[in-house]
Length: 317
Image (tube, rainbow, N blue to C red; front, top):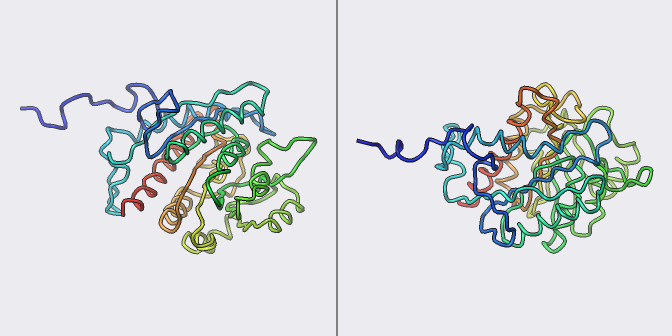
């Protein structure tokens, strides 16, 4: 006698095509019918140090298969909750087309993908690429009403312009703050000798930024940190993998020691999913070639799947 769980394919993580979470691939962006649409943005021409984040989307997708045994959801005994059950429809849009050396065209193609996800009513999740890919992601929200940005990162990324560069990976939070529909930023994990001069911090605070280092966040804890985000704000979350300590996430272009550990970030994400509506997500700067163990990519996939689990658990509640 065959039990139900023995019928069909076992479909182990290393079997099959590595879409995000082994979810369906939708090549025609006008046909997206899902709660979540995952877009790859393999652009890393905005980097100022080590390149390689162009391989981030591919590596994070591959790592995500580890957490995708079937689609019955994942039970968490600590929370007594099943996350990402079959009622949460996730699709993989594939990658935006990248035109080498052409930031404008590459960013425009990423923006087109995010707009397609939003037009379909899906939560856009963009996997970078370097942090400059946040610029087209935020551009795509120009008709979505006011948003607040939660940035989890080692670096402030608030440079206005340097040597004529306005759209590199040191600029995205300044470009976001320029938008009339971005009502503020909460920037968490910013530490050490950073990519932004003192004037950048002064400019950021003048333009509505709340800036916390890792140690300041630890002193506050997750609940009090997230309580600093204005009530009722719709939140866009951008996660730079270098927010984490390179002891657990070495696979990134600009590592910065003293970063977060896993649960510190997870608890902030779980809390913000409880208190605010999440309207978009990107995760950037995974450069897998600097981490032969693959653990940076696994961390990225695990964070994204958990965050999606928290968001849709709250929505169903």
